[in-house]
Length: 66
Image 1 (cartoon, rainbow, N blue to C red):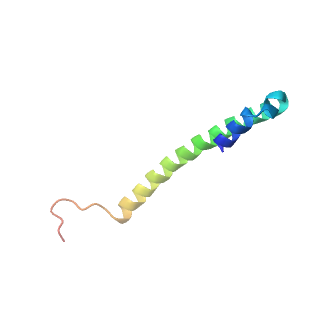
Image 2: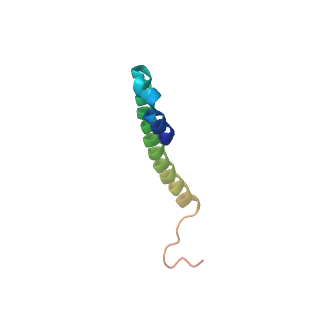
Image 3: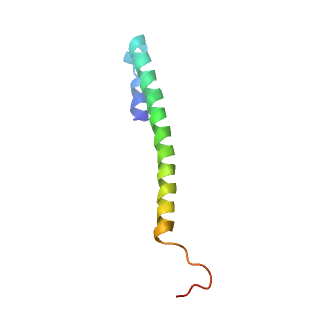
């Protein structure tokens, strides 16, 4: 999506229309925010997954060969 926004911003049509230029800038900022939030959510999800996995499949301690 970021690439599409960049391409549209590079078009002469956007450069000549300040209202459209503002809208594109707003969309670009929103896209960056969404990507940052998605990255943070992915990290949180991975942490939660590891915690659940450790609960279901606990690591064996040394000497636990049973």
